[in-house]
Structures are given as C-alpha cells and as structure tokens.
Amino acid sequence: MSTTTTKSRGNRGSSNKREDVYTRITNQVIAQLEQGVRPWMKPWNAEHAAGRITRPLRCNGEAYNGINILMLWESAEEQGFACPLWLTFKQAKELGGHVRKGEHGSSVVYASTFSKTEETDAGETIDKDIPFLKQYTVFNAEQCEGLPDRFYALKQAPISDIERIAEADSFFRGTGAEIVEGGNRACYVQSQDVIRMPKLETFVDAESHAATLAHELTHWTKHVSRLDRDLGRKKWGDEGYAMEELVAEMGAAFLCADLGITPELRDDHASYLDYWLTVLKQDKRAIFQAASLASKAVAFLHDLQPATQTEQA
Image (tube, rainbow, N blue to C red; front, side, top):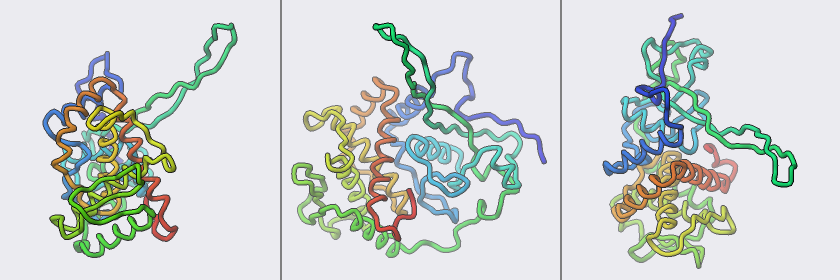
C-alpha cells in the first residue's frame, strides 16, 4: 500500500490568515461569472458508465447536493475528469484501493452547528446553536488506483435520445404541474399557478424543450402551497427577481443532470449576470443559499413522482 501525501485544491497557496469557506467559494463563482461562465452549466462530455450527464456522485452512487455540485463540477472540468464518482482517502482504502501519490484533493462542505452559551439582558443563560460549514477533501476515482471495476467502467453504447426524453416527459407529468402549450414565451405565471410553454416544434430540439421546462418547474416549486419560496422580489428585474432566476437556473441544471439532459443556456438570462455579481459580492452566503434552495426544489419535484419513478434524490 503506498504512502500518499495529499493536499486540498481549495487550500493551495493559502496563507495563515485563510479566507473562510463562504468567502473563498463565493469569490470563485464571482470570478467565473465575470468571465461570462456560469458554473452550474457544466459542459457535458464525460463518457463514464455512470452517465455522460449526471451530478457528482459519492462512492456509493448517492448524488451530492447544493454548493457541492458546483464545486465538484468545476473541479472535474478544471482537471478533465470524466468519472463523476468521488471518495475520501479513507473510503478509497476501504474499497481496496488508494489515492495516487501526489494527487490533490477537492474540497466539499457540509453544514453543522456548535453550541454557544450566552447570557440574555435579563441575566438568563441560554444555549444557541450556531451554524457553520465544515470542509473536507475528496478525490475523483480517476485519481485513485485499485478500486473496483465500476469506478473505471466506460460507457459501452450511447444512450438513446428518444428514451431519455421519454423519461423526462414522464417525470414532468409526474409533478402534476399544469402545463399549457402555446405562444412564444416560456414562463411560470404564479397568479394562475400555471406553466406556459411554446410548442415542442418551436424549439431547436427536444432537449432544449425539456431543459426549459425544467427551469420553469423549478419556479413552480416556489408557490405558497409548495415550498413557499420568497426571495424578496418587488418588481421585474430587481435583485429578488434575479435571485429567484439564479435558483431556477441551478435547479434546472441539477434536474437536467438527474434526467440526462443537456441544460439550456438561455440568451434572455444574460441580463441577470450583473445582478448576480452584485448579490454575490454583497453577500458571501448568497450562492450557498441559492444552491441549497435549488437542491430543495429538485428534491421536491422528485418526491412528487410515483414510487416506481423516483430513483435519484
């Protein structure tokens, strides 16, 4: 068994006074947005057996959620990994393999709390749970040796577009959302609780239609009878509106990954880039909140499916 010295990619070049996790990740997203790159729009080119289009996966096949999706997509793209499977140093050893010497790990986070005792103005002692993010390091399966064959298996045959879109159509029906076809604009009309979609033949292809509908379905989850998501929108185009669009874009990207569909990069959303940059620069937790809300929206849509259809969370 080899002895491996590893480092986290997120910590390279850091000083003793390191940026906190929120600030570091938010700054990465800001840098990408300033270059016109949306980190939730991953280029889909992997040919691993686990899927050409998928969320990052833990070693047991469970999909990552929230900000970890963006972090691991970005890391995989930067390093050219086709495999969507990630595991810790310890998990690699438990599976009979090891991380190759000199490999740099990628950071992921999970939310936790610590208890803090405080005294109120009335002199009473209370315990408060303080939320924080804990960071740990994972490695892509391509950085490891000796793992079971499934970690290295390549796709043997292309997935049928017809079958993949049929699955998406079935999923959309399973939500129970009212979807009305016609017109030339895709939108969710909250006052009527209805999604309006142009006819399928008006889109470039079936994937574009499905990806657009995934976006509108994410908006649909915000209704007071569902997730009751209110991000402070007062008028069209304000920061609350742009924040909801950010959640919908990420939600669509996450759902498309689950359904094996290439996300649609919509030209009419380019105007939100400045708003997103403003929000992220003002609030280092905003991108975490948006990714978390997007994951909750997608999980909600999965939960609406008949039991036989729900395979990914």
